[in-house]
Image (cartoon, rainbow, N blue to C red; front, side, top):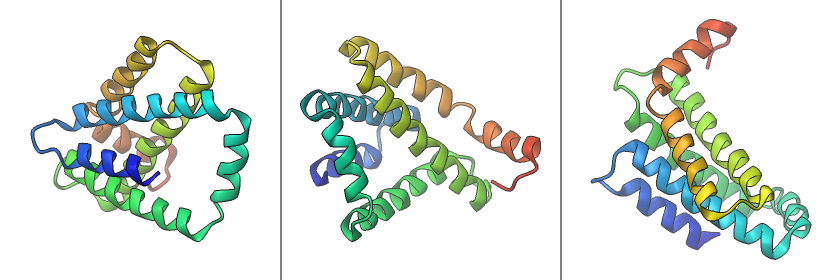
Length: 144
């Protein structure tokens, strides 16, 4: 898990890449890693995840990941985006990466199809994220 996090941080820290390209690289990396893990461990992995989710080390890593992705989203969105919307955008991105990644892995798709999911995620999340986040708060009346 730590090696994967080091790789993700390297992608997030790369100054030459656009936010969209970073999301694409992270999605592709995560989707491939998830596919390999599910192929190797299957349902045992799901049970282990439930166990580890309650462990202090896992919660600490989860907080680290959330904080780093929040910084990434803050830098990707317009400067004056309210903190609540940055937080909401971060949750959307992490949820999409996790849920789509697991779904792609469970479907045992070929690598090129998995990469296509990564491309679509990057294309749909980032170019409209500011407007999408704004719309989410006005349509639901909820504070993002």
